[in-house]
Image (cartoon, rainbow, N blue to C red; front, side, top):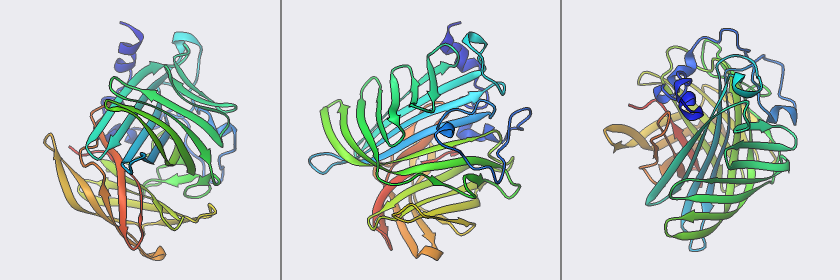
Length: 344
């Protein structure tokens, strides 16, 4: 049994859980986030092996020379079997990478599997580097990063340059996810400017645009009743940004939260005020997924329609989920990204 099969065998809570439902498991000996203990940088750009699950996430809205819109995703997941780190094959840390490129008529995606302790994947805080095999997000500081990934039919190599500050969601990074109080540590860098090249089946495409980085870690971020989430990161033409999510309970919307982010990075949190209503769905291989939404945040005058650039942006990976670029129209204009898990 080689290392990659060991990864598959050791991912009961991640790779085998439809829609991330395994995130409701008991924390056990793993650490839990503490209210009033905000992240510290640059240390908290790095990994937190005492927590059960963690991810570093980039989504980007891009434009080619002819005006064609594209989306890019780069994700590194860490899942721990025990709350510690160790060298070599004694490491209980498991790593999973996802990458995708989306256009109006195409959605290309791939994944990498690895284990910790043997140099195949990992994250260091300063200088920052997150990698799995030859995929990398790295730079001398967190404000200027190079990002690359490749798959059987695509690749990308872009730079990320921060044009604004980090933002801490919830209460100084303590992000509540349920009425019962499950929570994660969660911060973003939503102000990255992007420049680089996509390598697609039709050739290389120079692109420019903007990117949104998320880093989140916890040990039990969902309650037992929650079955999945709908997560929106929206950048408006006026410079404001909105991160909003709803954690579904069955067919109901469940727990909702939104961060309203001003152009200077000032953040206003809203618990229970964010509304997301599906308007249209797509049948993706027998799975019905909402691909057009009405999103409202009345306190900030937001009443907008969110539409998928490519409704077929289904990542048939481990685990499977929908992730793709969206357009924004209505009270606000702009674009962003949408992630949906737990649809069957």
